[in-house]
Length: 234
Image 1: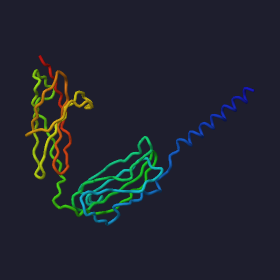
Image 2: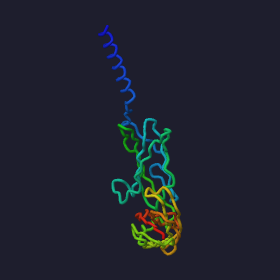
Image 3: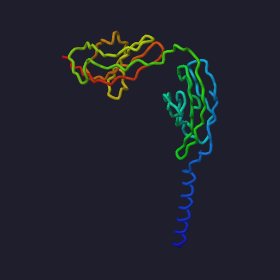
């Protein structure tokens, strides 16, 4: 009886292992290819805003999309290297919208990935023939100067200042962001700088602030470093 019980348990365990293998089995997609929809090879795009579109693969969990200028064999610049990942609802995008490119030749390529395999890259060359004078240069990153990082002030009126070398082209502006937490989740205030300065009144607390620059063509700089500021009001 005991032997029969042991055999039964062993059989159930083997069935369980087989079930786990079925669940954990990853589809081999290495012989599949992502089908490009647009732009196809030798396409001329007559505007500077380009959208990349492809047909999805059922067993893919992510897509790696890359764009090089003029091509990957002789790349002067890698314009884009991005990963689109399936979300928690099972959706994954098959289109990259509004990629802003200057005039010239490009190559884009894409591959599908899952947890165990990846497809070969599918690639196509295209050229952009839009506005020759389009401004694609982002402003320089602001450098914070005052108050210094870690400063403690006893005046509610705070005068912020930073430096940034302007880039020739469309008009540039600076936005300041002031948060009440180090994780930069609780926004106290934001404002538009004037001549790379900004003044506001703050209450007794600790703050974290940074500045980003924007221009009239829609370009933006990376965020500056983050400075900490404490107000210890009398």
